[in-house]
Picture 1: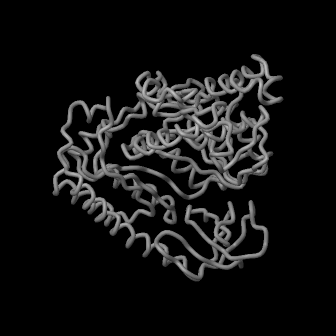
Picture 2: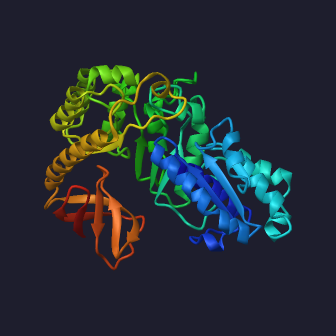
Length: 428
C-alpha cells in the first residue's frame, strides 16, 4: 500500500516537472513514506529523519516531507514538534500537504512550479492511482481498492492510522487499471488491508469476486494478484474466482497469525485453528496446485510454549508456500498495548521466530524441489545483478541469465536449480 502511495505522489511530482534521483544530495524534495506496523519500522523512519537534518542545514531550499502511518490520518503534533526541520506532514494516501508545500516553497526556483496554480494542484488531488504519466513503466502495478480498515485486530495500529475502511468505486478502479495497462503494465496487484472485504461497505453488490471478473476482462492485461485476505471473508465465490478466472494467479495470501485458539481469541481474529485448517483444505480441494501464503506473529501476550507449539504444528502440517514471520511489538493505542502485558521476552520471541523460520525454509525447499526439470511461465519484471528477475504464476521468484531483453515478457523457463527462496532456470 505504501508503494502505491509513493508511486502516486511520484507521478504527481513528475507532472509538476520534477524527475527522480537515487541520491539524496541531488534532491530538491525528499519524502519519507513511513510504516509503523512494527517498532523496528518506526525506529528506522525516525533515524532516517535525524540523519537528514545536516542536509537540510546545508540546503535551505530542500523540502523534507513525511507521509504515511507515522503521521496518521489525524496528524501527529508530537512528531511535528520533534522534527521542526520537516516541511510537510502528510496522511496515508493523501499527498495534498506535500504538493501544496512544493508549489509554495519552490515557486521562485523552478519554472514548471511557477506556472502551477491552485486549480492545477486541485486537479492533481482529484486524480487517483494509475492516472499519471511516467517515464518509468512498471511491469507490475499496485492498485489500492480498499483504503483503511474497520476490522480492528488487537495488535494492529492500521485502523487508527489509516482510518475506517472505504471500498473505492469499481468504475474508477477499472479506469485506473486500464490506464496502467495502456502505460505498459502486464500485471496488476489489487490491494487492501483486508482485500476480501472489498464492497462490504457499498450497496452496489460488487464484491471482490465480481471485481476480479471485471479486471479479468481488460484487454492487454496478463496477470492479476490481490492481497491481503482474511479467513473470515474468503468466501466460496472468491475461491471459485481464483480457480476459474484465467488471469487471476493461483496464489492466495491468507494470514492466520497464530495457531492457538486462545491466542487467536486474544488477537481478535474471529476464527479458530480448526476453521483455518478447513478453509485451507477447501481451497486445495478446488485448486490442488494453489500456492498459499500466511502471516505469523510470535510472542503475542499470553503465548505460552504450548500455544507456540500449536503454531509450529499448524505450519508443519499445512506446508504453506510462504510464511511472513514477525515478532510481536506493542503499538501505542492498540487494544493489546493498553490491556495485555507484553510477557514474552525478546530472546524468547527471537527463539520462536528462528524455529519457525527454520521449519519454513525446510518446507519451502521441499515444495520448490517439485519444480526441478519443469517448465514454468515467468513474467520478467527487471534485470538485477546480471540476471533477469521474474515470477511464476505461483509467485515464485525465478532468475534467468539471458542477453535478450525480457522486460515485460512472459516466457517459459526450464527450472535447473531450486532453493527455498528462489528458482534458477534457462529459457525454454
